[in-house]
Amino acid sequence: MPKAIRVHQPGGPEALRWEDVSPGAPGPGQVRLRHTFVGLNFIDVYHRNGLYKLPLPFTPGQEGAGIVVAVGADVTGFGLGDRVAYGTAPPGAYAEERLVPADRLVALPPGIDDRTAAAMMLKGLTAQYLLRQTYLVKPGDTILVQAAAGGVGLIVCQWAKHLGATVIGTVSSDDKAALARAHGCDHTIVYTRENFVDRVKEITAGRGLSVVYDSVGQETFLRSLDCLSPRGLMVLYGASSGPVAPFDIMTLAQKGSLFLTRPSLFSYAARPDDLRAMAADLFAVVQSGAVKIRASHTWPLRDARLAHAALEARQTTGSTVLSVA
Image (cartoon, rainbow, N blue to C red; front, side):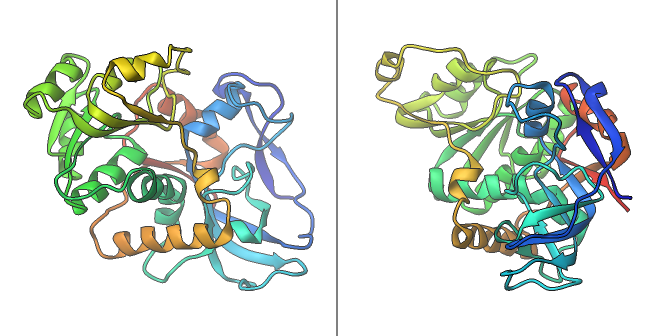
């Protein structure tokens, strides 16, 4: 019988349990997928610890790649043996096999292997909507990427540089600074010893930034606002340090008529046609070499708790994948 990681009660990494499961036959509009690799993302931590609540028990994970092994009624475009990947399916990726809505799948082109796909679908699609939809990055823009050495951060830095932007990134160590610079970051700020607001003002000669991409949340939010130029855009798309506390919306006016958005990938990719277009854009920049996917860490799926502990301790860089084979 296939196995999966299950969570019966919210908690730390120890809440991830390796158990037998029975995915069943695919229903209308579904396929049964045998995973080869599964991606690890911070949203998995939020689900596991209960910050984002899911009905119990559940299998976490929203990103994976593998082979179609069964097809339900009314499914078109996919057949047995097809290589596919996803980054916007309902939770359930931490499994050897699972059922997936076919409209959440994209076919993998020959030039992208399964490990790379599992490392980039959710993160790469996130980068796509951040750079090409939430704010249309263009030559001459100067942007700030918080957590620039993370999975999303490394993709955003490369893609933004490819689009002609000047990229500033915050990191926690010199090693991560070197990694970010190797992936398109023009200026790195080691926030553990530097004031990133002061450094941004220095780099921009006091002008501030067109946009800030912040996935850190609580620790950085208000200071990220201080990095923007008048009418700049604050994009808060994560909360790795915890949720942002309520604040007075007049703060946006006082700091220069700023814009603020809290987007999610699942809104941008809700329609299948939009998902396919976003994936095509991502695959194109990866296949061209403009964006290189760094799958830095691999754990066996059964050891997902070790991967979660490392991610929460900020011991990882780039993307982490869980091997199913």
